[in-house]
Length: 427
Ligand SMILES: *Cc1c(COP(=O)(O)O)cnc(C)c1O
Image (tube, rainbow, N blue to C red; front, top):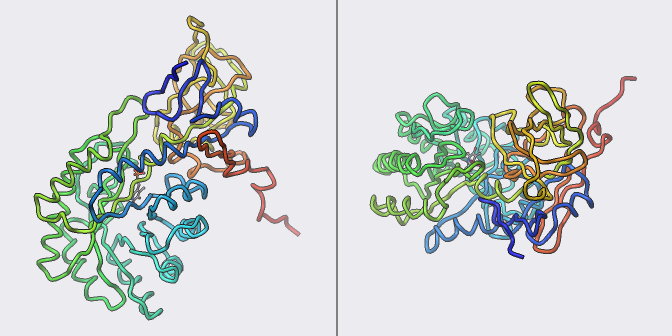
């Protein structure tokens, strides 16, 4: 029996008519742990990472997993054990890294709104670099570090003003975004940083957006950043590393992003051609490491035929899978058990139980399903669990990480009591 691999999902495949995650039958996982259930493939994460590692072979490079894509401890452990650092955006994420066995010195701290408390926490832990996003933040960080008799290692996030050609909500490198320092201001801001006693300038960084499926925006951004590196170093400020951010897209719906090693072959060729091939490189991939390493299993609760639309109501909802509601995003939806060849399909709006019209998972999907059967929402490894909420007092889903023939429960399903822990009744 040859497994039928799903496009873009080499570690999720049909054997016969049954969906498998690596060597585990998805329906058995649903049976054992209930639905909605996130199922991750460790091999898929490591093979996505391997593409970057191949791309950087022989280079001085550090891959920092942008953990906001999926910050579950078991997922972080996989990357920490594989030698990754982490790109964090809050003090809470730093605590998660440390709890998962990650090394503080391989942590870089991004984000436009770091608090003084978060700065102190990160300095105490001894993180590798603060990616600073404004002049005001430089001043505060210098003050905080000085008060601790420390110098904070900093890189300034510059805004190369290139269009990543992605959804406006996940485009971050354009002039009117809240992120980074404008290209024109970068040199002045670097001079200011170099003058501050509590700071040590160590690098430069950019991050132009997310779900980028084209090589050109990266090549353009690299040119813009290297122009700045030249100007900053000419001003006598040495930059030990260049951080090119994350943003590489994945195949959700027949997109064809470049493979990480192919992309980096081109970027490294440019870096070499411009004479910066010996610099330490950092990258911050998130989605491309985990997005297609996860699926969400869900059960069909009701079929509700209508005059205009037929609804397939499932037990996963926008609180579990927020991307369709937030970004009109597409997730493929496939059955755990394929219907017999020639089975009649119906076109459904696949929706969750949450009381919002925005609670949809997929539009116009042709499915041959009955209540009680189960579906898999594909490409659910990134920006799903980490963005999930308890809206409608729905406990967060359970998560299992599959490693060959073994499934590890890495997060228990939340109970209602879990969701109101920390709340208090009035006297
Ligand atoms: C979100 C984010 C990333 C990761 O983006 P992906 O598209 O998931 O690769 C990297 N760097 C920064 C600063 C981010 O905010």
